[in-house]
Length: 618
Image (cartoon, rainbow, N blue to C red; front, top):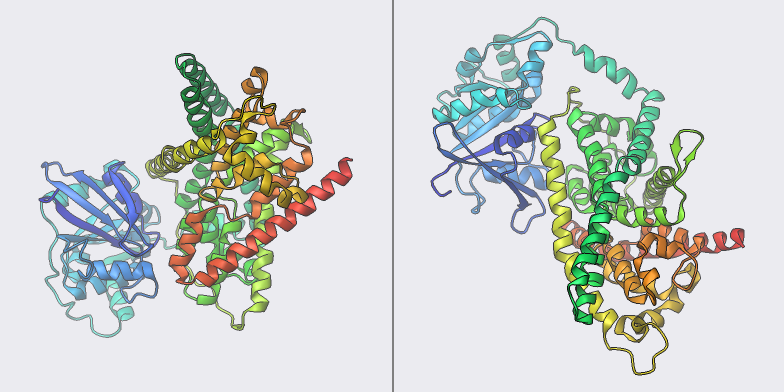
């Protein structure tokens, strides 16, 4: 696309810029990081009605080009042409929220002063009209000296104006120096608004009504708790039929392929190593997508900033800022983007504390582990006439991570020398119906990332683990399962005494080692280990959950199952997270402290759980 039109989207957070990007590019987009910087880089492509190819760059949201964070610095440097890999852009689309011009025009004025080719995109015009706002776009264009186009980013029909404007080349270097707009930026904006905007009814009655509920000190917290509870119930209830289908598919695949491979070692590699390993993880994809569905809907609706505002007082008392809410919520999906999202926290103390507790949020990689253990040891039954017991346990595990994070941040608050207080200032966007296309693209991206991990790191580790569990072969006259004589078996038996106080057998110990690469690998690892540990056909035909929860030599006690659940609340089984902490903080000391305290917590809490459960259960 060397001859493609190069454009970049610039705008404040919550201006609808990303929705516009999704509607322009659809699934034709790639996400990565800038070279040497953990800042997300989203690039997509689309074609104009004339056939002209367009390359579009979605820059991080910023309120000003006077950067105060790495995100804002990237936007500033791209706008100023300082990033070689991006080069010069043919045009910058300045996306503004038509309902909040007073705040969003500040960035536009800074762009105009730089003299870059600009097209002002007046987004959310449907919402502006609903509120009774009348905006004279022609006069706005004249006052700013740049072309203006109206859009509604959440509707395909709403971006046709933008497509035609780009096709006709309606973007140019500002043709005015804002004559007559002397004084401060605030005064300039007030003068422009007075000339071009007429308010018939300035209040957003819908948002005001909803805020009376969701920002209420009591009803707001209750609403948040109910929403989270519903999410965790849905993760189990809605996903069950899809998971059963995937499990049946991989079981059938293993049988069909296994029947046609006569060589025992090759059969074991394909069926026990690859299919059992990868299939044991893919089965949890429906649960992960349901979790992300709720997160994306809450984000698209404008609720998340309100949840941050609502929890600010509680989080502050624990040594966190309300701004930590969104990074910590992102960590429920994955701690890596959650830690990267702490760049929006200006205060270094609050940012470091948020980074230190982010891994305690229950990320989606833990979900396969939780789902396996809950299915194995928690009955699938209804309690109190309406609640799924497995969903209640999952909710409890998520809450345990949240409470632990608050506890750790409370301790850090007393250990840190800086005791200053910081006021939370953030924009609360209008409520809006979620953009279904953006939600769909977000889910599709999440599925691709998950399946890529299965096809990459999990596939490779499954093969490596199969090799370690298969070789060397048992000697003649061996009486134990072959895996006991393998490299993995020998290592597991050596390390098992260290983990005996928390109830882990040598098979679990083996699975924990490759799980350092990614938590969900433990499911594939257990699948491989137990497939090779089974001594008869009946045991091999059982699902992993049934195998570990049953009696006999391969089964676990309930105390062991609960102990492993607790282990994964705390243990830092994710090298990508630790690497991100190093890149974000530049400190190996921080990484070392995080690793030690998380493993220490994991061992201590698992020890308490196992010993208590063993005592109570006899």
